[in-house]
Image 1 (tube, rainbow, N blue to C red):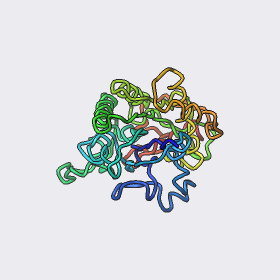
Image 2 (cartoon, rainbow, N blue to C red):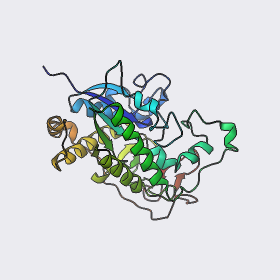
Image 3 (cartoon, rainbow, N blue to C red):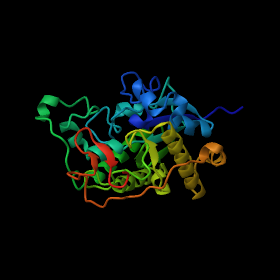
Image 4 (tube, rainbow, N blue to C red):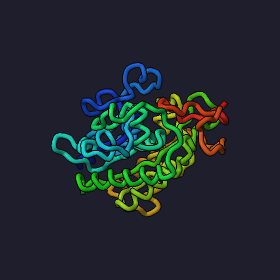
Length: 309
C-alpha cells in the first residue's frame, strides 16, 4: 500500500485549531470560539477536510492567528520561522496548502499593523520606538504590490526549503456574516480592492512555479461568524470551494502530482457545496467613514451592512 502524501498548511487564524499548531503560535479556534462557530474538532476545519478528501496525511500546520504575509519578521508569513514550521520531525511536506493574506488586506499593510499594535505584529519591533498607537486608515496605493512582493518572497523561501513539495496557493475568498441572506463582504475596506490582492497571489504563484486554487474565481461566499472566521458550515463550504478550484486548475492542464487524488475528490459528496453567490453591493471608494461599514479601526471587520441588512 502506497504511503499517503504529507500535507502542511500555512495560514492565519482561519487555519488554526487548538492543539494542531506549533507551541507558542496564536490560535483562534479554541475555547469559546469553538462553541461559537461550531468548529469543535480538527476534522471540522477546511484544511482537514481537503487533506482527507485528497487521501493525504497532515504533517504540520504552521498557521498563526492574526498573521500577515508582509512584515519585518516572525510571525509574518514570509519569515524563516514560519517556513520552518511546515516541516516536522525531520520530514518535509509533499504538498503545502497556503491560505493567507486576509490580514494584509484588513490592515492595509505592515506599517499599519505595527502602529495599530496588531496582535501578530513582528516580535522584533520595539513598540515604544513606534510612537503613539494609531488606528489604520486608507491603505497606500501600492499596498497590493507590497503584499505581492512579500507573498512571492514567502513562496521563494518555501521552494528553497522544500524543493520537492507541490505548493497550492488559495486566493482570498469573501465571507458572509452568519444569518444574513445577502453578501456582506467589504471589498474596498481601505480603498484597495480585494481582487488586487488576489491578482498579486496569482502572479506570485505563477512566477514561482506554484499552483493556484482560485476559490475567488468561483464567485461564492462562505459563512463566517462575523464575516471572516468560518463557522462549521463555512468550513465545509470553503473546503468544497478549494477542492473545486483545484479540480479547475487540473482540468485546465496544470501539471500536478495530486491529479488522481484531485479528480477522485471532485466526485465525492463533500465536493458539493451550498455556498451562495457573491455580490459586491457597495461601490464606495473605501469603507473609511462609511456608515455601512462594520468597523475600520484596529479591531476591523470585513463586513458591509449595505447589502446584507
